[in-house]
Image (tube, rainbow, N blue to C red; front, top):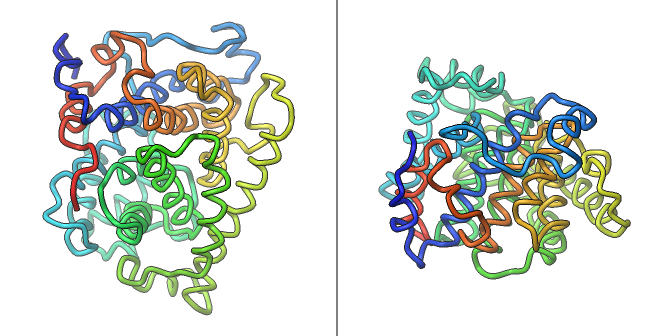
Amino acid sequence: MRATGIIACMISPASRRAAGSLFGLAYGDALGKPTEFLSVAEIDRRYGPAGPRELVGEPALVTDDTQMALAVTWALHDAPGYTAEAVEPLLRRRFLDWAASPDNNRAPGMTCLRACAELSRGLPWQEATVVGSKGCGANMRVTPVGLLDVDLDTLAGLAQLQAGLTHGHPTGLAASELTAYAVRLLIDGVALAELPGLLAARARDQRTVYRSDWLGDLWRRAGAATPGEFIATGWDECAAALRRLTAALAAPDDGGDPCRRTGDGWIAEEALATALYCALRHAEDPVGALARGARTAGDSDSIAALAGAFVGAAAGMAAWPAGWADRIEYADQLAALAATWERKPG
């Protein structure tokens, strides 16, 4: 749905960071959509060495990344409370609606489709999830969780639950929590440059914390000996990705494909690390952060989408060019949610 010229008026000063993050995710998704599956050489041939920096289309189309982020956002918006029992049925319904929608024609991830097919049978989500998958579909949609005014335990539980419905691998759970936590920190005013250290500390602190009230017996499905052993695998892999990020940031930026340093982004921890790399390298040039994410040989739309969510949370709607909010697909939904979303009380 295309927005009208009143979109900017719908976004109050109080919701500018929420709006910046939600719209930033969609903008990055739209810029990365046509470059996914292309080599950097082909991207440069089409867009030049700066990468894509302009929205194309009326409206500019997004992918399943934004569609599923909206599904999560609406589920949270409609929840009567933030508990597993309250939120899981709403997430399930929104995911199944997405799976059945005729607009679900944007090269959706196979893990999400497989899990939704099982969820549609009415199975407990712990049985429906693809327990071995840590694809980036687990965290490309989680950033709205970071906008909530909830305690960190609830944030962690919500982030892991929404991931777990489709991606049951512990790294998908841990990376989703870190992604939402990064947005929370930025909404609270933490500088982008501080994120790697704070996320690494979170990974250490949470290494053996298994949230049974949110995850139930998922650990048994994976064949782990204990819940702590199960979740530690995910935190260890995320910690390793953050170490690669720190090393990449310490080296000079050659302007090349960030995937060479922090991973192609098809899996959750790499999508987080590479998106953070783009956001940190271009903290003063938000559109440049999106373009850097879109100019990769990896999962360009997911990387650019997450980079946009991070930069937008830090800088608000002022980060983005005037007029883009009227041109992005689903603009009306993004604006309506942002208008009520800034630190919605739990």
